Image: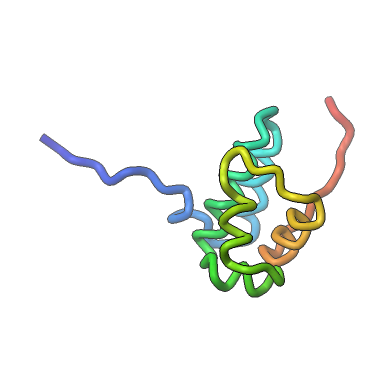
Length: 94
């Protein structure tokens, strides 16, 4: 019987283009926890401690902000995205 390792998206988030596509797809879901989970996956791929430092946040604050059900401030989300090397953009709904 074959055994499989659990899927971890963080294992595949190794460049800005992939990260941007992943986060963009997560933003399409109406559940805000999907986006927070995606940002957390990217943060794990990049290293939580380094991301916290780059975003100017404490490590504990970062974990708290990315917990499902959290309601992080808009400026916190922007700091995280900037530290990850991506940005939000707006396009007409189709």
